[in-house]
Image (tube, rainbow, N blue to C red; front, side, top):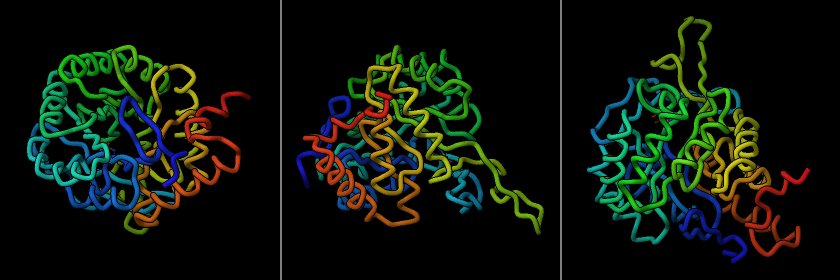
Length: 304
Ligand code: RRO
C-alpha cells in the first residue's frame, strides 16, 4: 500500500482514508476482521447500546432505485457483550471505532465508558438514526441536546469522539458546530435520509416500520453538500459517508472536505473488494495530480 494514502484522524493512524461505515458487517469480530483484511483503514461497529435490543420485525431492508432503504431498529447485543468480538479485530492493529447510541446524555456517557472498557480506540456517537424514537435524530436535531451528550461523553472518556450527524435537519452546520464546541474530535456526515417506499399492487409500505433511512448513491450529493458546508465552519476532521461506491466518489468527498470516507451500502452491491478498488483509485489520483499525500486534496473544492 502506498505511503501517500496514510492519514490521521483525531490521533488515530490510518493506513488509508477508508473506513467501514456503521451498520453493516459490524456486529461480530470475524466480520469486522474480514473488512480489515479487505483493506479498510479503520472499522466502525454497528451501533451498540447499554442493553441488548431485538430491532424491528422484517422486512427491515429493501432495495430501491440507487440505494437501500432500512429500518433495522438498532438490533444489537449490547456494548458489554462486545468485548470478545472486539478482541478479535483489535489484534489486527487497525483502529476500531465503536458506534454507540443511548436515550439520554447520562446513558451515552455510561455506554461510552463501557465501550472504552471493552477496547474501543474511538467512539462514534449515533445522534442520527432517522427512525427510532427518543434516540438518534431526535437528539441530533437539537444542538442543545447534542452539546449535552458530547460534553458528558468527553468528561467520561479519554478517547477520540466522533459525532455522526443526520441530514434530516434544516441546518446541519449548526449541529456540527454545537458538537465541536462541546468537544467532538471529528464529525461524521451523514447518516441515512428519512425515506419510504410503497408496493403499489398490495398498497403496503415495504418496510415493516413503514419509514426508514435511505443510503447509497441516491444520497451522495446530499452528503457531499453536508461535508462541504461543515468543513468550512469547523476545525476538526470531517468524515464523509453516503453513497461512496467507487474511488471517484471518495475523491469527490475529499475535495469537499472529508479527511476520510466511510463505505457501507456499496459493500452490499459490490462486495468487500470495494475497499481495495477505492484506495487504489484514490492513490492513483493523488499521484497523477502531483501531490505527495492524500491529505493534500482535502477541501480543494473550497477554493472556488
Ligand atoms: O438500526 C437502524 O435501523 C439504523 C440506524 Br441505528 C442508523 O443509525 N441508521 C439507519 O439507517 N438505520
